[in-house]
Image 1 (tube, rainbow, N blue to C red):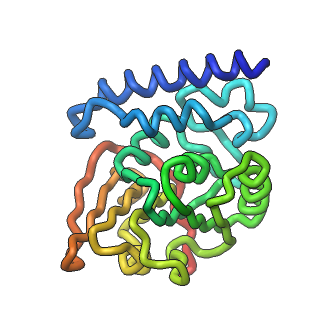
Image 2: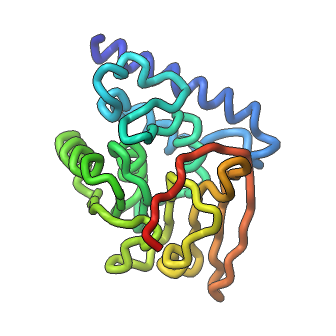
Length: 222
C-alpha cells in the first residue's frame, strides 16, 4: 500500500471512532473526541506498531495481537482513554504498559514528556527503536513492574494504565500530582470498567467508572 492509501485508511479509522463515540455518548458522558486527539491519530502510522503480517488490518477498529499474549488496543479505546486523560503540551505523563509503543506515540504527540514502563523486555526494546526512528524524542521507556510506577520522575500530571488491575496500585496514586488524573481499566476479569481517577489539591481521590472494557491483567510483583 502507498502512503496515500494508508492516509485514507487512517481517515476512515478516525471517522469510525467518531461514530463509535457518538453511539456510546451516554455512558462516556461526551459525544465527541477532541480535535487534538483525532488529528494526532491521523499522523501516527499505526501499521508500524503491529506485527508486519497484520499491517494491512492495522486501521480496523479492533484490538490486534502483538505477541506474548498481549494486544494493541482498538483505536476507539486508544482515542477515548487519551481524550479522558486530557494531556497537554506542558504535562508530564506516565504510561504503564508500553506494548509496541502506539499509545506512547499518541501521548507524545500531545504531552511534553512521556515516561513509559513495560514488563516485557522484548516489547520495550522494539518500541524504543521504533519511536526513535519515527522521531518521538520525548518518550523514555524502561523495563519494570508497572504497578510500581517510575518514582524518579514523579509527580506526574497524568497517568495512563493500559492493563487492568482489580484496585488502583497505591504507588501510582502516590506519584500522581495533586490536580492530576489517572485513566485505567479497573476491576476483576469479568467486570472491568474504564475508570477515571482525579486527585484534588488536597490529595483526595475521586473516582468515576464508565464503560465496560476487557484488558489483559496488569502484571505486578507487588
